[in-house]
Amino acid sequence: VYAWDGNINTSNATISSNTAGEDGGGAFCGNSAFNAIDTTISLNTADDGGGVCVEYGTFNAIDTAISLNTADDGGGVCVEYGTFNAIDTAISLNTAGGGGGVYVANGIFNATETIIESNEAFVGGGVNVRESGFFNAVGATIASNTANWFGGGVSVQEGNSTFNAIDTTIKLN
Image (cartoon, rainbow, N blue to C red; front, side, top):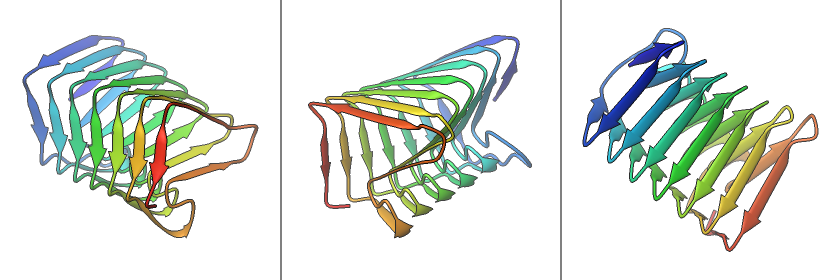
C-alpha cells in the first residue's frame, strides 16, 4: 500500500506477504497521512521498513499488529523525516540489520501503551534511534528483543538522538 501526497485509512484490514524493491514492504507513507486501526501488517519485505516506512508523513497505528516483517533497517517500522504514532499496538517478531522492531532517523516515533517484543537486529533489536531521531515511550513495554552487536532492547546513536521513557518497562533484552 503506497501513499505519496494522499491519505489512506484502514480498519480491520490485513496487509500481508508483500515485497518492495526499496521502502515500505507492507505500507509506505510519504508526505501523507495513513491511519491503520485494528490492522495486521505482516510477512512483508523491503530495503527499509519491512512492515511500514514513513518519509515526511504521519502514520497512526491504533490496535494494530506489525509482525514477521524483514528489512535492512526497520524490520517492523522505519521512520525517516516523519512521525509514527503507535497506540495499543504490538510490534513483534521482525528482523533487520538496524532496528528489528523500530528504526528512527531524523523522525519521531511515539509509543503509547505499545509492546515491542521478540524482534531481532544486528544493532537495536527492539529500537534503533539515529541521526537526530526521537523515540517517546509512555506506558510501553520493550522486551525479549535481541541484537547481535549492541542494544538488545534500545540503541541510541549519532546526531543528538533522543530516547524518552515514562512508565515504560525495558526487560529481558
